[in-house]
Image 1: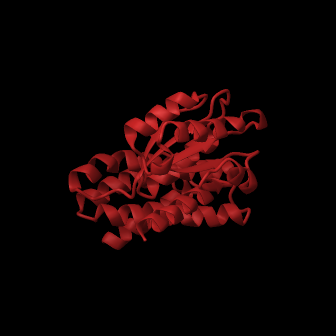
Image 2 (image 1 turned 120 degrees about the horizontal axis):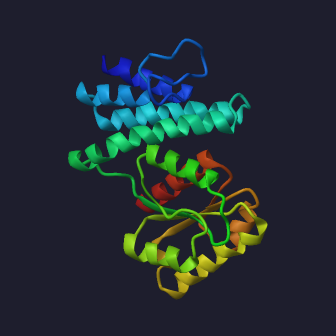
Length: 230
């Protein structure tokens, strides 16, 4: 029973179905339970929350990532699956706290000052939540001082900075410099991403990692988390 509902959660993440009223990638799925109904069912029947997240939600997104890289899925398909995971995590977050299960870490994310684009950041946030991280999303067009203040107040393990415009990329360097001046740089790992950003640029401004897309961003965070623990 438990494995059956987890398999259904995974499949419906792949299909991008949040509720039973949603269509999927395949025909004839309307009326069948979606991710949110299945997650509620799993919790009610005693399935461990960790299994729901790792095997169901993250397992489904791993398949979505493979399909995206293979050209079988496009951004709208990936976003539908990511939104399904986000809806599930809203259900699970209070239960995670109540159960005493430790999250993997806390991440503050923001699109830098003068940049209003946040689709990529939003996808990254949802994927990170699905992977078991607590995400504090500051939004877009965020001033460097606001980001630095959030790092001081939230004491996150990671800081994710996004920019879609070449004209706003320099704001990322501003944030890192302000973190250094505030004595906060050593306590947080900084990951940068966005269409104009590259590995070379990330290294040039002193970032700890670079994610070309949401899936790579999660992989970088996981790798940095492992390095910190070892």
